Image 1 (cartoon, one colour):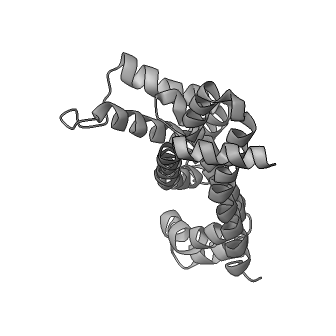
Image 2: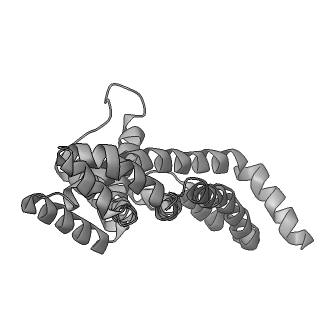
Length: 235
């Protein structure tokens, strides 16, 4: 046990700053991907319950296709196809370090596109908690589909889907390590470097990074559980 603690101490002395910076990158990836995924996922959910068959078909196809593709492949497509082949650049090339910033943006794009499909399904499960009579009553007083969705359905659907949305956010936090495939230095990259150069303290490396992930992920799960109980819609 003492050997493991000594290994953690050595690892922190050598890679401490890099580890903190890498985990901060994971936090930024998770935050921005969560924001964009929620927006896109909400749009997809509205399309899936829309009275227009073409919109329902488009949203259903997107969700089914994207959920069937590995996240790594989506991240690589954003990096190698959008940037490598099509030369689509999301960062300002006049700013120093633009390539790293561009890789970050591409990783956020890939994470958002992938996670949005799960957000859509989480929100759609929340719609099932809303009594159908409320939507029918809203339509009876002359509200259109958009008004019914915005004023009646969506607020309750979000409250009813906090638990699955929390699970999706936990998965997104862990999935942010896949951004390494787009050239973003995440905690997984620093861990690989530490294993390569310090194989003698491998147990300490795994333990330290596991603790780091627990610190990131556990509060998210606890918060979503608390909010799902606190904001549950009374029936």
